Image (cartoon, rainbow, N blue to C red; front, side, top):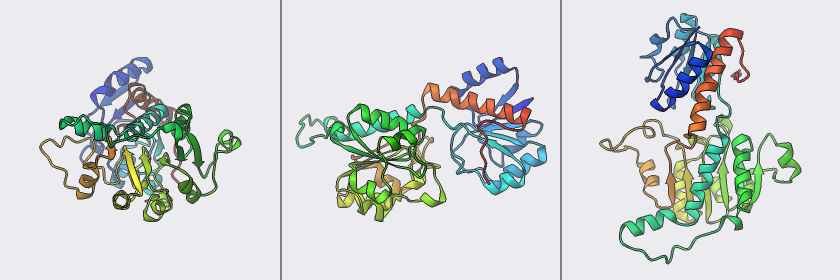
Length: 331
């Protein structure tokens, strides 16, 4: 059995080597991402493991089929950058890592919200400019707030546990309701009802055609004045221009974002000598009531280990058995 793993970073290599030693399987790690210029490196292998933010194009799966490769395993959750039709047409089995560390993502979302509530970015700016006065930047307390959690899967539930530990009230919405949360009476029937009741909206849902720009001008207008927005899911869930307008009107008081709808080419790139040519992002990034991390909420040692080793487990199972417990049906 031979597996090729694309886009392997230095921090992933120890966990890959550990898996290879344990499973006695040949794995070739390459640092390049999987695209039309690197796919030919996969010829002669039985399976492919990959992780990247940029799209996987249809020609990659045509080449996989040509090479006799039908086992493709993602080291992440989302499949929104995978062309379903090409995967199906070329009879490729695909798997993901559905839960590498829900706590990692949930913890950062709450951490960033706490910093916004206590005006940490504002104080850092003032103190860096010699102003050590606290007025007028008075903070808020999480224990006094109602949190609207959209999406109550693994990450959403981890966030709920943390928020409740701080004493916050929870209002939740999900098309697929969790029985325990349902029993606790946390759900509302519509997003509009959630928007009207909460002080914070936090997103924990996958990117789908039906929820593209879920938070748009209409949604922001249904919220309380001074609401806080958290997005640790997918950038396309928020209409960024509508968010900027909501800041300017005072509807939104702050936002913590780990993703941006046009993040490819911005995140995971060193811009020291390469200014970002995106005026919408630059507008967002310049605001002191916005905290942005570069899609790094997942980035903890336990999560990276799980991403690498579960993806390799999945690929091995697809090759050996033709199926995996984490196989994704795209039909």
